Amino acid sequence: MNDRSREVFRRVVEGYLASGDPVGSRTLTRTMTERLSAATIRNVMQDLEYLGLLGSPHISAGRVPTQMGLRMFVDGLLEVGTVAAEDRQVMDSAMSGGDQDIASLLDHIGGTLSGITRGASVVLAPKQEAPIRHIEFVSLAPDRALVVLVFANGHVENRIFAPPPGQTPSSMREAANFLNSLAEGRTLSDLRRSIGHDIATRRQEIDSLARALVESGLAVWENPDEPSERLIVRGRANLIEGASETQDIDRIRVLFDDLERKRDIADFLELAETGEGVRIFIGSENKLFSLSGSSLVVSPYMNADRKIIGAVGVIGPTRLNYGRIVPIVDYTAQMVGRLLSGRSSV
Image 1: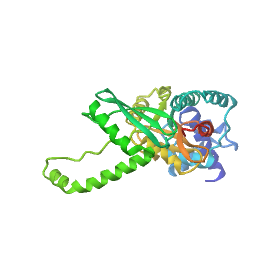
Image 2 (image 1 turned 180 degrees about the vertical axis):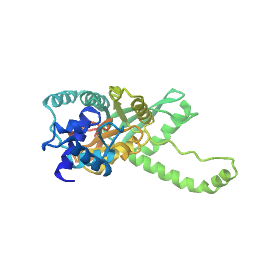
Image 3 (image 1 turned 90 degrees about the horizontal axis):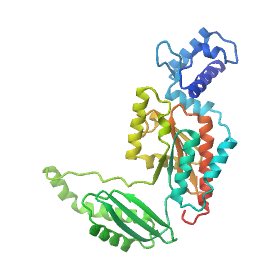
Image 4 (image 1 turned 45 degrees about the horizontal axis):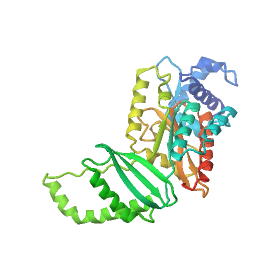
């Protein structure tokens, strides 16, 4: 693109991100650095549309950036500002609750991040890697149970989960006893790998029999449930604010369904672990939000050893104010990392 088409493209994207409406040629005649006629601007916009950077929602409407256009804008033309003083003050205040446990503190930080960005915040809590001292299961209901994890460093963590069907308090006690016999001195990751190895070994022993049962129609394989991650999702109501069109509301419902299932969220957020800094995922660049027309701005946070232990992010429409959201997410991730670095449980 030459200077003229680059400026037209940038102003169309900035106008769309600010208002959510298509940007027309007459609007641009009042903002362009160079004095251009509406007809000249329309020609430039048509060229940009041919390149796949702009789209036209209606025949008589202005232009909006395509997903490819938004990606090009974010990668090459986005001007990232600094965190506003008032936003910084609010986030600093949210992180001042040093007497809270980690889960409560991250929940509060997520709610605050959601509030100042007007999006839905997501927080992947730090992975506990201290050796385990004791595991206990407590049945709460036929479809709900509590696991109590006591770590060697004194940290105690409670998690609610859905047990496999048919589990009884007695079977849960047996499972806890079995795990405790293996767990001492091992982290959760070590324990998971060890049990996974045992399962794989034993699976090989019964594969031939299982194959015969499947082929005879007497049995079917069922994929085991994926292990759930500790994910905090706050501020979902912010996503429907201002969504007046039925198709927008339907897209948001799809996003809610994806969030409820939480399938692939942990793996998706862990994409942030490939490097430091903020990453931006737009629309169908990720399988989780491809149907909902949403974007995710996410950044990992690290402990004192510069090891990535979690991530924070903001979900919103593809027309997010990236220039404002990116530094807020970056600042939040850095502050969370510093805050948790001093805690022995991380």
